[in-house]
Image 1: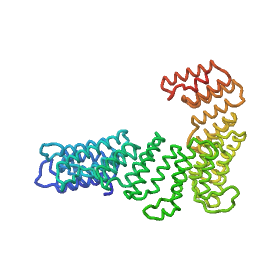
Image 2: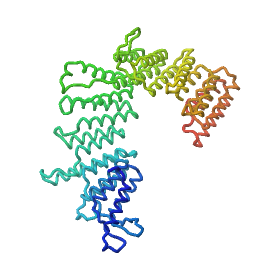
Image 3: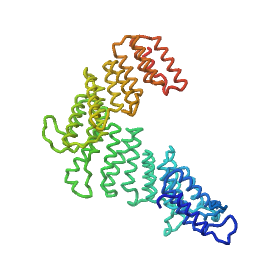
Length: 576
């Protein structure tokens, strides 16, 4: 029971030796223990959930299935023939496969069990037992935890096969014996939906919901958990096709609300609202996200909401956070967009300009970081700096809970805003902010500037054409990495920003080209971004022949497989 399968098997073999009949003089004897003892060993290996234990479980199961003698190491050659496996043995092995995501092995085993009932011949003693509900659940779990791309399709195929077999068995039985262990029940449908949710298969999840409804009509169909799984499946689809996922998820959510209002489902939980808000945020659908938040806020204060059966959930920090993210990712560029995000913060207690009261805030650093990222995307550096300073004050006053990892993201977002800012002093302000981070770290503030922070500062230097400072900082990053002060060495972005700084600086033609070439060699491998920046530098000086030679070198590296991508429109335009 503690997952000590190896120790359990050793104990079992010792017991087999002690129980050996004195009348058995041969080297091979039948087991003195029943199959339940052997199932305990399989259960022990399954509880451990490790690959090496899995191999031991399969080896023992195969020995039981084929009645292969197992050697007992007692100093003399003695073998014991294990008992044949029963349904518990098969279920235990399938449970092992399910936990480790071994979909192919689970599928093969469940198919062998399912095929027995479909034949017309008389069952043999060596035939596997018919699968139970637990066997199907473990197989669905194997598909859920599998890394195979086609695992969701195979899970759906198994469910369809189960429905087909179950329908055939219903047609052949009378009404009193309709319940068959092959007919998919609610748990199997839910496990199939879990598989689709984890793999991000929205289409298949909705198909399973329809199958669920048809198989269990008259209000016995999918519950709120099943619909929530389908909604989460669309959430993962949103990483690939956010607009389509948002459209389909919204339709499903409206269906859930309708079923809830008709009494077929309980009131929707906040997690379902937040899932849809997350899908809207990924697609940048700010208006839809704000409407959904408004619905939560209005229902919170409405008289209709006082009725228990229609009570809507109250929005939490995550809800507001996701709406600000949706605004940040939207394509709206006007100032009103940012003002709408500020209004959300004001509703949560963020003080307006000139407000000196210390009223409690319902804000977290994560929500404020979403606002900082919005300001960063719009290049509103002054507002971002003001918000960051306010956050530091709130932490000192105890109005905002300190979170080191989230606070580091706050500084990085502010630096990014400075990187997009077009003011003359942006580089100086970014430099001061990084120095502030370094001082906080040296004074025991538990965080140091990350490589992302330094790269953003390098970008500010590049925009200002501060080549000397860029090269000095690049060298310092390398030294800090060697000293163990930062985890990562300078990357492509670091070198690229430095080359960009050289291109924008007032260095002489010969000096600039030589420095850029030296930096490109320091990278150690080809990269299309580095090539683009070097070509832009050559374009600045009108060095057409050198640009053509560099383009030819890039084509050669791409042809030999040293470059992931070949020349693009950007590279050819530079040469032109």
